[in-house]
Length: 288
Image (cartoon, rainbow, N blue to C red; front, side, top):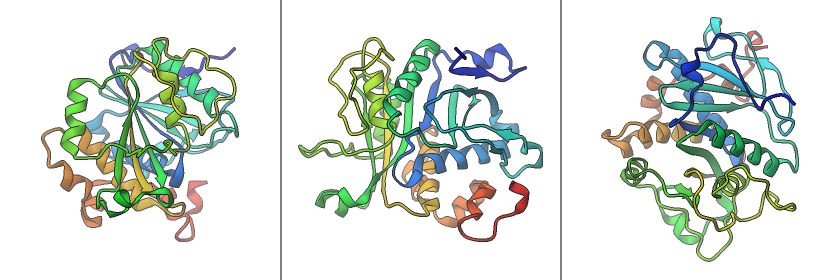
């Protein structure tokens, strides 16, 4: 059986030691907010590689994600190699999973368990999941609140430093209001898989995308950021989620203004992926 994580040939062993690192990945949920945010983050980090030191360190091989091959293009000709469905990048103590394909129908819990086993064995310190939630299901309080971000956590307590940064952001915790946590994608199954003392252990059969995380103690801390949205072209929401990620890792900055940055400021800071032009205009044939 092939390894779930396959290191890139020639990558130094030090970059493959993930002990104590923070893993960030997309929930692949409503509006594709998480995928857009990570797409933008990676494109921008590559643009500033001299500062960030970002490196592609490996690939995730799994039958639970639809296979895809495409051109890796972050706006730099030197980054025009072929890419696969799920790739792993690292800068400093941050590791990002870039997932370009959807999870095979009905296989989200199995994929979450695979991720949890890798996360546990690699000894990541914490996991951050970026995603969206349908704006249709909001209650009155959520609709009236100008802040459309929310966060959720797993059973394991966040590191004190990380929790302080979350508190500084002023993001409300997801209001359940006695109702089930209606979230699609990877977030809930991954919380379930990691919120156990034996992270990645096999879960009971029948756990679908709509199941609630089981009550448990211990495990690996999981922090999920959610932005209410609708399906459609959500580039603006992707930028806002990337701004939130940037603010989270920039303790001491004016975090709220970073999240609410204007389009002009965002354009100056971020390198927009060339593929973002495809739904809006005739795409550049070079990206193929």
